[in-house]
Image (cartoon, rainbow, N blue to C red; front, side, top):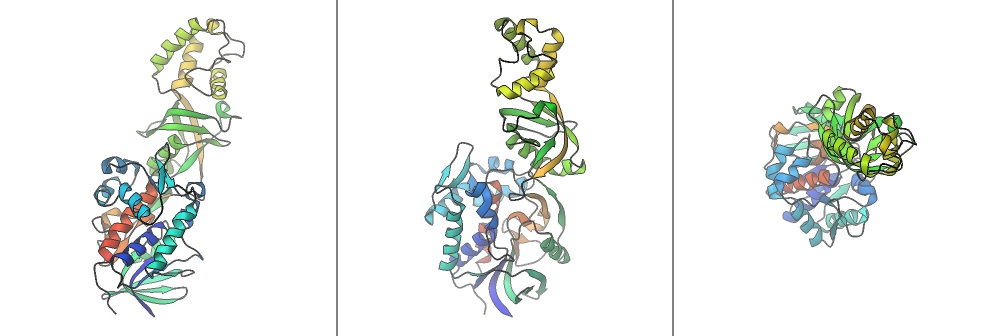
Length: 408
């Protein structure tokens, strides 16, 4: 049996961040990462299209937590302790400079996730962290003050144990056996599948600022909307899928959304259309796109309003004007399913948050058992927020786990 002071199960973002910080805070401790794969940091590698979206340029804790459909309340304290500014500083101190993009996402200036991976591997080596690949966890036993772990490559014993395995049903099952409650996982970031003439044959078209509501619920979001080969995507949709994860799963991904393409009220839109009817009297409606909408989308909505290719603004009748205003401000689409990004797959679900002490990220049920990252029932919208949760939790747990001196 191999003996360590601290073992971290899971060689992803949270696991590496915790291990490195523990070893740096207390170099006397023997620290190991057990990773079931043949290499670690897989999500880091593919995040942000291979550029690694490290965090998001939001520096106010109470604003930052609003990006977490699950975990908003619990993360407020931790974000006061370690958040975006601290993440940026941590990487800068280790020679990795980050940059902010227009939408607030932050990446290494190299635009390569390999920079982050190399940083972690170098730091782990520098502080003598043992990284053991191809070690799949089979069982966890708590004996007096020790945690005994059985893996596919032998047995381990440790004083302190951190679980940082992300959304892994096998590990959740082991934690249930220890008495923890697991919130059932459902997909959280996904695009909507929609078959509709109004968006057929125009993939790649982006409406920059729309409002989307799920009919018969309080769920809504805003932002850019992208029309795809199978339906709709981009932040307006992904945000809705995250905040609606549980509700939309209940509906078996069969529901209606109402899209306001121009973020104006129906009445304001009618007024503007009446003005356009006079100002553009001789032009054809189809060819004069308005409200800064992409031309191809405008044309689809015009044709859906029973307006022909040749109709001029002057010839629009009352019902055509009303129908066009309705298509622009309250177009209803039937969603018939979802598509998930396999690489950047995020789930809602995990260890019940009531069973974790968020001052230390320690289990409330078992002493010296800690959690960080997506193993918890915490998830965020897209944009670097899931990583920020991993860094904050891992750092705070590391502070706590490094306190005890090595026991051999």
